[in-house]
Length: 187
Image (cartoon, rainbow, N blue to C red; front, side):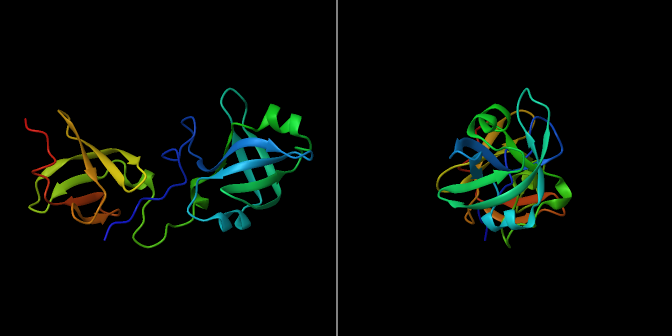
């Protein structure tokens, strides 16, 4: 069975860094510098395990901050960072930034789920062993994810559902698929 890949997103690298995004700061909220955070990891409780993080924001230097407190604020979190004590300071310094962690702190995904960054670059082969291409991207759609596969001459899409995806072997960097005749573009 194939489940949706989960991510600490945007493929989870930010601005080409090696750090992994676990949240995106949407806006300031309240008078004490709290911010609304879009969670980009598979479980909110992940933030219990974090004490300091790096906020990466376009056109700004990276900012190392401590997490003071956080609480659920659907659909995301309400979070307070040390040194950010007003909505004005939050908007000027961290809103629009990604909360990032080093790759060695990424939590393992639940069983039968995969990080997008683990899927990109995997070889895609048919059940007969024929090489079809390499996963270039994963489109996260509302009902199921879709693998974007490139074979050097063409690009095609494979829905990440058990009907088509038979096996995902992350350690072998291989995805085995079947029934691709109706999905493959005619050469």
